[in-house]
Image (tube, rainbow, N blue to C red; front, side, top):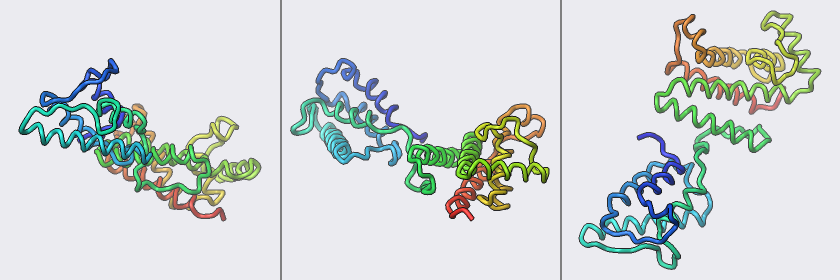
Length: 263
C-alpha cells in the first residue's frame, strides 16, 4: 500500500465524519462501523516516523484508537452508541484529528544516516528527509525520484564541504583543477552558483572526498542529469534501478568521507 501521511488522514476524517466541519458534537453508532474501520486502517498505514512525538499526543491517540476498536467489537452484536472517552469533552474523532493535525507529513526514518557533522539542525533535518525519501522511492520502484533526490543531496553536501574552507583555499583548489583540465572555469564567480562538477572536483582537491567517492559522485551527477529530455534522448538512457542505487551509493560514500575530520 502507498505511504499515507497524517494530513491525508485528516482530510479523510472530514469525508468520513462530515460533522467535524461544523464543529458540533456527535455520537457514533453501528451505522458508522465501516467509517471507523476505514479510519483505523488509514492510521495503521501512517509510517512510525510521522506519528506523534509528544507524549501527551501519543497517549491521547492510543486512548482514542482503542475506544474505536472496542466499539467495533461491540457493534458486532448490538447497536452501541458513544461519543467520547471517559473524561473527554467532545467526540473522540476530534481528539484523533487534533493529534494528527500536529503530526508532520515529512520526517526521516529512524534508520536514516544521522549527518552529525552538519551543525545546522534545520539543514541536517532537510537532507535527512531527502535521503529518507530517496530510499523510500527506491523501495517503491520510483527510479527517477530516487535518482534525482539522491543526486541533489550529494550536490548539497559537497557545496557545504567546500564552504567550510576559507575563500582563498577553495579558489586556489579551483585554479588547480582548472589547470589540470579536470573542469572548466565556472560561468559564475560565486561559489553558490558553481556547477555540480566543480563541487566534486574542488572537494576532491581539498581532500574532503577521496578519488573513488569523486568518481561515484560524478556518476550521480550524470544520473541526475538524465531528467533533462534532451540529454536522455541523446544518450538513449533513462533513470533505472541502477541509477537510483548508484546515486544513493554516492550519498553514503560522501557522508562517510565528510564524517571524518578534514585532513
